[in-house]
Length: 187
Image (cartoon, rainbow, N blue to C red; front, side, top):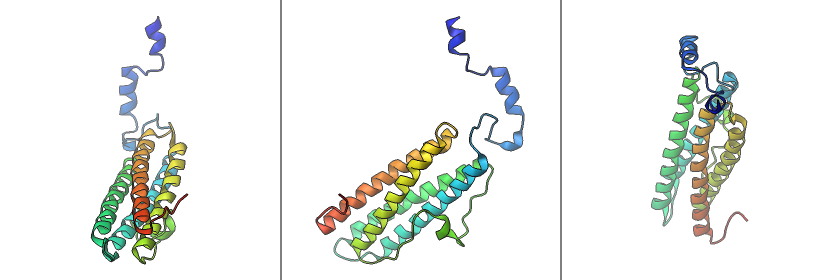
């Protein structure tokens, strides 16, 4: 009796198999998906745009950084650009899993992104632009993680991975800023 109660929430295998045969056109989206597919795709389109803008900004900064430490800072910017590209591709693949088509159209990219492209400048200005962008996405992804909760654990877990990377990037950038300015930018 105790075992029956413990497993009462589980769907029996026969029902799972029958459900899997229904709505094959829905791909990975099953009847147990609790999120709103269209809203999730729209949110992820903005994530793709945000990550793409970050790739472009970090790449521009890696190319244009000058000074005594430009090689090491440029390498850090390139490393962050590669990480942001992985995020962008993961979000795009999630859109595809949900039956959408990722929007890579450069037209309107800046308006779809949560972050700004920036405008270059000296090393410290570039680091500050990137740190601000990282702080924007950290806060944004924290909100999205709470939004998805248990309704879409796959998207939530993906964003949790992004968040950990973005927090690491922010720490790296803050350390660079302190090393080049001699004082913390943030209190």
